[in-house]
Each structure stands twice: as structure tokens, then as C-alpha cells.
Image (cartoon, rainbow, N blue to C red; front, top):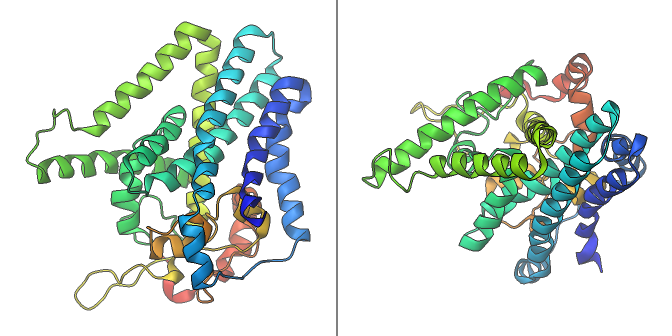
Length: 346
């Protein structure tokens, strides 16, 4: 039964469904659940620093139930999105309800969409990568697949990485620098990949072109099927989804910098170059994303066997709580700056 604990990740789309069904102030149920109730749960529950034995890790690695819990996010996310678009196009909503549903749907696109797409994007199976990219599509962030896998994991905790927040950089400035720099970085990486394979910029193998086309087709279908208001809703939910991702990016590497060796190259990524959290609820809801150092240390590891390392810097709060604090820069700096190792400040 313990293996089924990750079903709790579906509590986010469940709250979104409740908000869509009941409307009125229930449309804000998902944000309240994610950023008020979950932080309270994390404060009340003890931390879990435990790791599995080698035998347990081997068994969990080959247990397909963990994979299927990821795959289920595809029909759940798209089903909820379709329900939301139908609701917006067929119901006379108040302005606050419309805003609430944008935030609610966007949070599902961010947690059960982008976050799961990120996990599957690291898999070797073509089918799993396909699902991962499909989960990125409604957030209009398919370029994340290229930049994250070929850029971020190479440059994490360096000034060259768009997704690494600088010391004393506030989250709002980071939203701009990260989204813009990551997009152009994805194009740069794609161009390099094409060149390495002796292919031209206009090649059918240029995935960035396909991402643009697929995302435009998605928006066109929304417009044709549900109308202008639904199109506005879809764009608003997408922005909410990828800004949720960027807020996570912000807290994951804030202020940390890899040192350069005598040769002028950066030292390899170690367990000390990402912020971690062992707060139980956030770990489960985010499919162990909070054990981020181990993910960077060995990207091939599946989420269910990611480990806690004593040398990894630990956040004083869980990821959901830290995301809320990050939205209040003076409070974030006051809490986090004293935890950033002096010799790693970027």
C-alpha cells in the first residue's frame, strides 16, 4: 500500500474538479489547498530522511505501478482541461470565477502536466517521452524538453544556466530572465543538434518548429471549438502553469554556484548544488522533485528511488511553502540568504 502513496498527487486535479463543479468561491480551492493547506500539513508532519536499501530500490525500479501513476496524468490533465474549457465557454461566470479557474487549471498544468512531463522527459522510452511532451503542450512550454535535458542539466548552478536563480535575484525578475533565456537557449541547442547531425535549420528534424506548430494547432482547436473567451482562458492557464514551473526552478538552485577548476571548467554537479526538502507531503505531491540533488547527480534515476544526501543543502520549509515565501522577496531573502553557503554564492 505504501507504493500507492503517490496517488496523493491526484489530489490537485481532484480539488480542481471540485472547483469546476461547484464554481463560485470554490474556484480558488486548488490554490488554497496547494499553498495554504499543504504547507500546514508539512509543518505538522515530521520530516522523512530515510532512504531505501539496495534491494528495495531494485524492486521499486522495476515495479511498473510507479510508471502507470505517471501515465495516468495524461488523461486526467487533458480531461480536466477539456472540462474547464467547456465550463468557461458554456457558463456565464463572474470575473472572479474566471480568474479562479485560470489559476486552478494552470496549477494542474504545472504540477500534473509539466512536472510529470519533466520526469518522463528523462526516460529512454520513446513512448514515455511522447507522453512527457504531450503534458508540456497545454502550458505552451514544449521547448522545456530540449533546454532542460540538453541545457539545464549541463549548466545547472552556473551563471550560464537560465534556470538557476542568482543570489538576491527576486522571483519576479527571475520569471522574465528564465523564460526568455530558456526559450532562446532551446533554439540554440536545437540548431547545434541539427548541425551535429549534418542537418539544416529547415530540416523536418527541427523539433522546435514542430513544437510551435503543435502549440498553435492546440490554440486553434480551442478557439474553433470553444471560442475567444476559452482561448484567453487557455493562454492564461498556460502562463500560470509555466510560471509555477519557473517558481520551482527559482527555489531549486537559488544562490548556488559551482566552482571552477584550474582548467577554467566548472566542477561536476554534486549533491550540494540543489536545494532539497524532506517534507513528506510536498515530496509525494511533486513525485519526489524535492529530492532534487539526487536527480541532478544521476538523471536516470526514477522518482520513486531518489535519495536524501546529508551534504545536500536543506530548505527550512517544504517546496509548496517555499514557493509562497518566494513570492514575498524581502521575506525570502531574510529566510534563505543565511542558508546559502558563503563559498557558493553566485
